[in-house]
Length: 441
Ligand code: UDX
Image 1 (cartoon, rainbow, N blue to C red):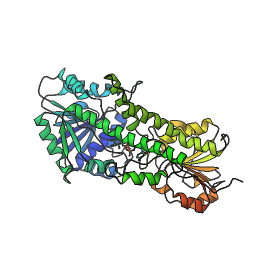
Image 2 (spheres, rainbow, N blue to C red; image 1 turned 90 degrees about the vertical axis):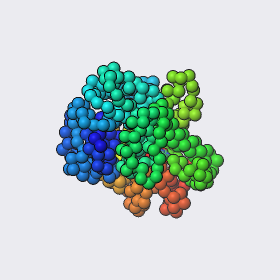
Image 3 (tube, protein in one colour; image 1 turned 135 degrees about the horizontal axis):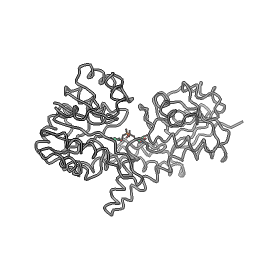
Image 4 (cartoon, helix red, strand yellow; image 1 turned 30 degrees about the vertical axis):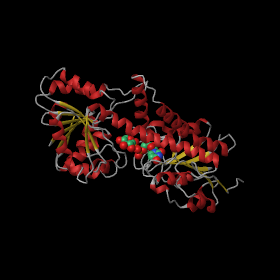
């Protein structure tokens, strides 16, 4: 099939590349000339495991092309994906100016039937607005479909190639048929394509992300209780997760959820609910708990130093909002940095992929190290903010000899509490007993 993808951000680039991989002819459109030149020249613009190989192969086979011209990009396409940003406005609502702007332009360019697909996370009612924006200039037949994307950063290729489900919001049989054919290679394993109306599809995406965020905030509160009641959240997590109705996944407490989706989408759903006079109370609490949780590790650190961390030097492992990405949007590590630096601490950080982005954002506010061990040299304590695999089984002898004191504040529960006790560390994690063997000299 001939496909166009408008917007070459995270979702657009993964969508375009993965659609080309199954033999479709894909043209990606972006107004950013520099980006298009880079992509055309074979240089990928995001870090995502497994994507580069697919990108290079499909570019070489000329199944994947890039242009800045919307007219050229959509001319031959039967299906046009809109993968455009929906940044949050001041009040938390999603700003639709990019999507509706492009829809208006598409209306001026259309000459035959096409299916226009909203791939971005957009508020309920957006498909109707996109339809109206196109119809202002084009009087022929076309369909607008809501087809939200559920991929996770770090495993985006796998999520796209083998999705748990595909949600298609349209009542048009013509569009349903086209999309069933398009997605057939991706649901061979038997996962469902769920057809529904546009509004339900739009809400499904927000409800999914908000529910997952709720699971995380719930567990962060359970972890808080564990700390106060002397229970171990790892045990509680396994105890409740074995119940299939609850499930094992997304029950990991930590330093709060971050990233480009959860914070924005929860806020936007609360805002949408308010607009129809509904107070979505659970989600307001989810956001509040998340904000509090981001400061929880900082509080533990302050408590350890009896309230004053001025002049303390911390090694920080992890900056990305989660492993296997260089994405630092809403990364809890950034808030931890802010709070520590404000209180007079000095930080040396290491992250396998995200240091460049943090340097661009905050410059010389902190120091950066070349390796996870260099990062520790002369620091008073180690703080862990992202659960990269390489941090999971480190060389503890190196940690011990590089740190001034054997003190670890772990926001991701990477290490076994008993093992840390045996090694002689002072070890604080989230919702688990504190190991207080190390005695400051
Ligand atoms: C999320 C959704 O999972 C995905 O379906 C949607 O399309 C986009 O938003 P993503 O933001 O890439 O994906 O990351 P995800 O793996 O879901 O993690 C989000 C945040 O929650 C991270 O900050 C992560 O550290 C945190 N998290 C996740 C927890 O704190 N505990 C958990 O148990 C799981």
